[in-house]
Image: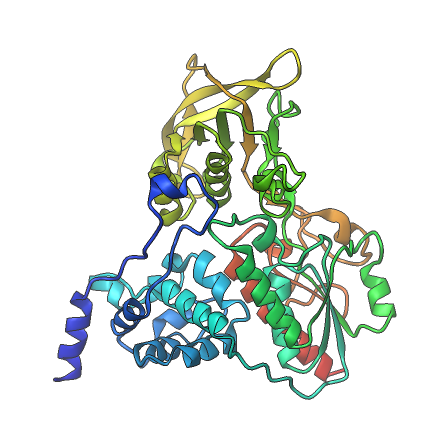
Length: 470
């Protein structure tokens, strides 16, 4: 059979669906929604790959995973080696296989997607990474020590990716994390039903086996500073503190009891195990009616979490239409399947409280779409006199977050932009301070896990070159 005929056949093979818990079941538990491919399904999906000589999919991956190579190993049934290939470029493959927006990155470049459905690269990545974890056969090879020390501030995706690559280069790496566990947004932000914390912890433990030291409860900017780290023997510093300062809408009633930032709501539930109250003393009050303001992935996570905490009605309040919602298609579909109610072309203008200072209702205004704005999306226009109230017990504000100023304000000579983000060279990620590098959300503003990891890897390469030149 010729190569062209074989390729034509693969184009016609449908993409394999991801098995999931039934919506009516999963809406009431915190277990992982997606169940993962079986070995048989993974092999069949991997066989759809055309093994292109010039793989476009790799150009769409921020961490340059060797995609055709690991998929080929799955197709051959060599799952262990598939995981080994993944880890050459990716320090957190089991995480990326679950939460990366592959449809907008590697899968969007897949040749099969031109006339049909792209290869399910993300699902195969998850499969290979999970197999490696379950087999327990992953080998850790420690390189020869370089004699150089690097401090990393923040144990989120950028910091962990940077740490992994620097450890592979032989440098001694210490990660300083403000919270009591490492992982950053992977631990406190993304719910258990989408990214199990056990998976994240296993990936972190793998980094520790490579020699990465992780110190928790270390609030840099309070107990120490970037300058002090440099004075105390570190040859370089990477700042990967993310975007953990929540934004609010600045409307009346945001200080009422029952109003959360998405950051606090998800942290209480995920990291502090509020969903296991009273076993864990972190109560999260939701009541019967919950409104989530926003329509990104964080908003979907908050809404689906509220439902699992016992809310009867959970609303996504968004001033644009369905077409403009920034959340991943998969997250929107899962939310709708579970019963989340979308109140589109609707914008909150005030939160009303009762005599005890608790949320009572949400006052909203109806909108219609006008002409496209600067972003290319049609601008929402308020309809005069269209105010209405919705009975409400809890409001979660999920409209984004910015940089926490603790590190930046305690680091003289560090150039910032007007939004308070660190200015770094786009190629080396070096900042205005010699020996200090920065990447991820603290530089770009809130983005995706995989983009933060890509920045961490790029910074690691820049730091390695810097240390070789010292």
